[in-house]
Amino acid sequence: MSLIGALARLSLQSNGGAITTRLLHTTSVLCAEPLKKKKKLDPQIIKQREDRRKKKIEKQIRRLEKNARQLKPVEELEVPLELIDDKAKRERKLTPLGTAEVEHRALLKKQWARYKHEEKVADFQIIDRLVQSQSKALQELRLESEELYLAAIEVDLQLLPVTIKGPVATPPIKTYESPDGDYVHQTMKWEV
Image (cartoon, rainbow, N blue to C red; front, side, top):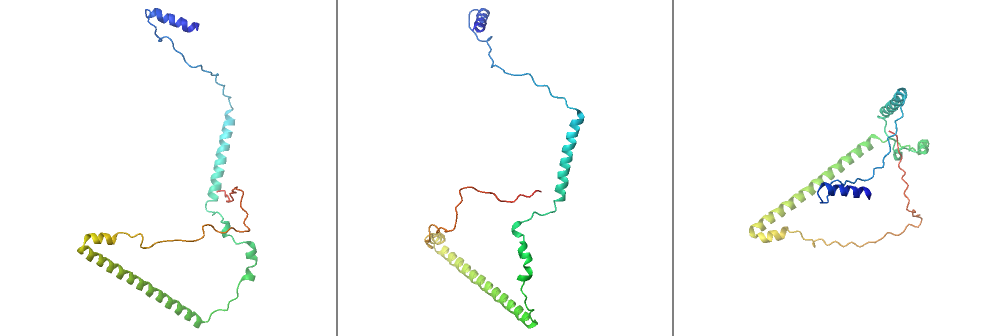
């Protein structure tokens, strides 16, 4: 208080009686410590550390370049060793087909392909005829009355009423053990 009072008196004397707070400046308390001296390291030790970092990075780069062409294995596509061992037992011994049977099968395939092609062409022709007749009818209707045309092209939502009835819940599986809420992430991680 004595410092503030002294400053106020000085302020009163300098301004001829008017109180001002120009000379009164307050700042927050700064709690600081002197900076710690940096430990001086030997330049050889610093150089050794940098060399170690460089070697480590170069080693990682070499490993990445070596494994760049290697594909990650997909466990689902790997054949179990038991099946590889049982391959001879599982292999079927089929008698080779005769030339007459091979030709007969080739003719059947050609006939089937021709039949499916003709069926597809016929379907496209039917669709084209329907679209043409519909567009012609709409043009004639537009010439007669614009209002009827607009009513005809309007979408009718009740044309195809959809009502679906089915089970609202599937029946429980008797042998299913429900988890406790924990999720275990089992994806394999491969180093690149």
